[in-house]
Image 1: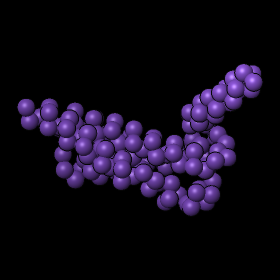
Image 2 (image 1 turned 180 degrees about the vertical axis):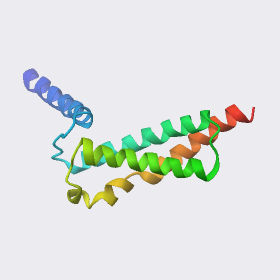
Image 3 (image 1 turned 135 degrees about the vertical axis):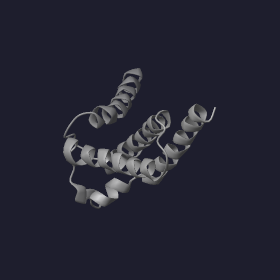
Image 4 (image 1 turned 60 degrees about the vertical axis):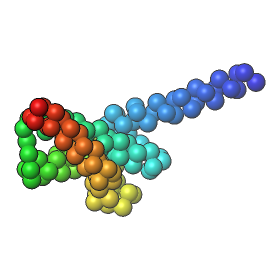
Length: 124
């Protein structure tokens, strides 16, 4: 019984590790579409926070900052799923569906991070 239990634990551990391994491995197979959409969603959140920090460190303001965020965020994810992972976009509803996956949440995280960093450094 203990043998079966450790086998299940290692299988579930390998499954959770395999998502991360596949996320950083080019041309990975994604049998579960939801896992790939989760990778896109969380990758976009990380990108949004990083861009917010960078835009806050440099005194970038206004429409230019918002526009550059949209271009960098959408562009980097498009390159990721189209060139790096080379997934069939039609399986996920087209390139537009993948491009907008988690965009508004990422935009909110970006704005909060950008405002906090910018205000803390440039209005002190």
